[in-house]
Length: 311
Image (cartoon, rainbow, N blue to C red; front, side, top):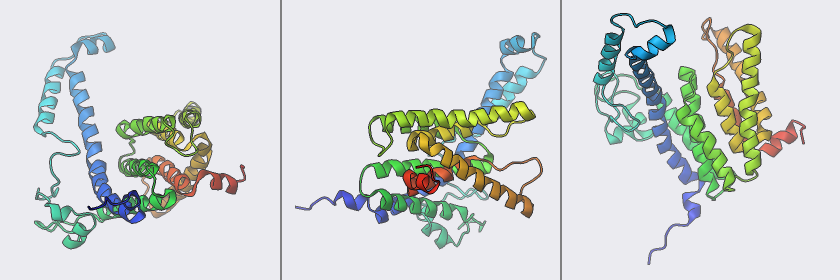
């Protein structure tokens, strides 16, 4: 009789690192498609609003000008002509020649190396960021397995880290932190704490972590806006820090914000010196918040608090 492989094998650093490579391949899809899906939804909302005469009348106390409803209908037809888009459909294709990427071309890291970073049909360059994201996810999963050992909570932390990596890349590309990731991440942390699945983070600490995370940046946002008339950050940053607080407890909020602020300032200054930060643009804060959360997760909250002299 063949014995089933032990749990330690499936939760070993090497095995989870391999799983991380595959998850990283999916994260590339999420990072590429989710912002487009969101923008399509926003344009769909615009089309609906343009056709809503009652809403126009309530807002402007006047009748909608001629052609506004027709413009909304035309916009909706244009959106419908784009076809369905989800994280699973349609299959991956080359953006230049629409060549359908075959399964062996889509293997994490190996597919990119086999193709030498070029489309097999048209030779268009494939960004090295794809295999780098896969490698980063694999390394994160392996590091978490080494840090927490062969226990189910390791899988929870792997999912948490994968979500943070996706948010980092999306925010860096678009300066948007999607509610489709931040809000489920927040609720997942609270539920996991309520069920006793997060070591050292009881429900009370998770709840106050979410509250402190959200209100701290919300307060900074409003103080800055009232003082300058400008918006210093987006609401997605509040939700992300709330999610980090739910997973890591209220004590992690200040160390995360301090790490994110220092690193963000350094990166922003370097980008400005190199001329890669255009006038009027800003460096998104989300990637640095997520990075601070990963550091706390891997190093441990207690050693960080001791190093900062807060214990």
